Image (cartoon, rainbow, N blue to C red; front, side, top):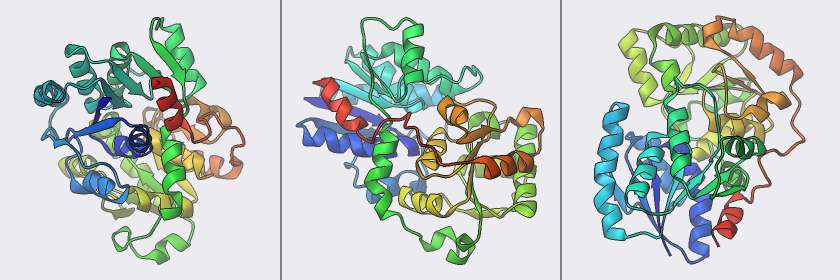
Length: 354
């Protein structure tokens, strides 16, 4: 059984690690196609190396492009690969441009599609990710959801005649697989910085970095938090770095280059609070028993808000970040519920594929 797996962004590399291992253990022949969406070596190569991911069958050159141009180039470069391999199944993760390009190519080639992390909805149509995940769901034969809410979303939207199965979150599988290998490295900065209370921050969402006023507000709030509440350590996403330079904005927080998964797991273990617009990091904070502030007005991972594991910080509301962060720091208690499964999502996916 031949499977084409399309990945292109940091979260997908992480999600694919336990699934690739499960596929190989069950006799599937996997061809990993890296679209190059994250073109910085620190955002891609390091993940393949440290997580032992299968060497990509092909690496495309589709990074650093506007959305429609990126989607078009990905599809053009994927087509001859699909035609050459003749896969039995195509597999995509999440909600990136790579996800949608892979889903569209599978549909065009009449290849059954697996969508892992199906059914998530933010109900924010300004987010490219929302369009990517919905369209990919409509192309999929197997829709593997991480939560009950995601499953209910698909049922409510009338997804019939498909395999809709709640399998849990593959990111929990990955965290459990690699947590014991977490490590500090020199590029993260001096280890002494991490020995006092600090906040781990990341920011990369298009909605946050593409608007000068919104990004300026977030930068000011992060700087104020760093200066008045606790130090902030921030591995800076390449796209965010470009926008900061373009808009003449300066972060006064402790900046580091992009880090690998094992380094991020180490930082999660040491931090007191996570400030992020990343859906994956919101969950990783929860799995690490750390509170988080979601730097958005909504999230697909509504369970985190309902449980009090995270709180929304809507930049459009112009509220002080410090007051919201202080509140969750004082009220947070490690969660006892397990809305994202038990770390066996990859096994459940293999069982459902038959």
